[in-house]
Every structure is written in C-alpha cells, then in structure tokens.
Image (cartoon, rainbow, N blue to C red):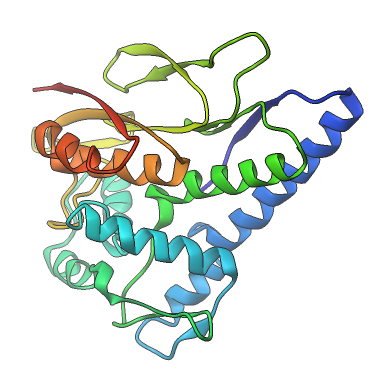
Length: 281
C-alpha cells in the first residue's frame, strides 16, 4: 500500500498552513509504516508473519482498522475481505508472468482467506490470525483509513476546510469559502470521467484500470473476488460517496465484486452512502 498524497487546505496564514500540513504528512508516514504490506518491517507484516501463532499486541491504529475491516467484511458478505492477501500475491505474480497461478498454490492460498480468522482481544489490544498462511492486505481499506485519520489531525488543528487526496481516495472537509462543496473529477477506469461536488464526505473509486492480465483471451482484473480467489472478468467501476473515507474505500471494492445491482443494494444499506456504477460487457 504505497501512498501518494495531496492536501489542499485553508488556514488564516501561510505559516499556519505549512505547519498543519507538516503534521498531516507526518501522520501519513507513521500510518503507512504501520499498515503497509509492501514494507517488510511494517507492523502489519509482523502480524502476518505470526499467523497461526499467539495474539500480538498492536497499535491503536492497526487494531482500529482491523475492527472496522471485520465489520465491513461481514456487512458485505465477504465481498470485501482484508485477509485476501495470499491470493492477491498470486495474482500480482500472474500479472508479471502472464499466466494463471499454479493450481496447488491457488488452492493453498484460497484456503488461507477468511475474515473470520481475524481475532481481536480488546482487553489487551492484541490481534491474531487464526491459521498459518493467512495474510492481511489492507489495500481495499487502508488509504481510506489514513485519509480519515489525517482529517482528524486537520480538524484537531482547527482546519476544517480541506481536501485530502490519497491516490484517488478522497476525504473532503468543509467546502472552500463561498462555495457549497469541493468539485472533484472522478476517473472510472473505463475511459470516462464525471464531476462531483462533495463536502464532509469520503469518495473512493475502484474498478477496471491498467492493472490487469489477459490470459488465453480472458481479461482478469487486479480486483480479486475474496470468495473465489479469482480476478474479476467483468469490466466494472464503482464510485462510492460515504460519510467517511474508510467506508467509501471498502465499499467501492465490494461493489465491483458484487456487481452493479447487488453491490448498490448492499452499499446503500449504509447510512449516507451513494453509489455510481459503470460497467462494460
């Protein structure tokens, strides 16, 4: 989970804006160091490496994001699942090699997926992955969570007018002076874009992008259905507008997995959520 970030904010003086932005970027760096599956020494990977063993004490942030992830996994029937790491690894290799994962490796990876294997102990603020071979991948929720925590930093510093963009996952605060919202351009990945006006909301788009592999005439997306372990073959893009960026991030992935009709029905059970879906067959 690499994070590219752009923050637009309004503050009374330039010096104040620079100081607040510095605090926000420091928070991003700390969170990425904890939650990234790309960094071998991250807190997340220490928990991954201990899968099947005893529970480990974890930071407040990792505990919180895992708790939110379990809730969202249950609410989406597993269409979003933070334990999809083993099969995501196989599909990353498949995109590099241009061939489907080895069948034995695929079966083993698939058996290691299942959000119910995340065990949290609130009394000791510790976490455990119940089966050896399990691996967490927070790519479908991590950027949204980071955006929300950066929003907390800005609001805590008295800055309420801001737009945070973490590689396309957005959190909008109060609108700029004299306006009713932030105007953002949403790229669907299907060759189309649309303009939205948002305020005090998270926005995330997930869908068919440049990350795919074509094997034997079948186009497999980088988005993996956690229930089957397979990359999606239907071309679909979903944009979710939610009260927070964490929810928007996870639901955008889930909608793509579930498809337009079921995905929208599931996502719109969440209060204050709107969904835009485009598909190409």
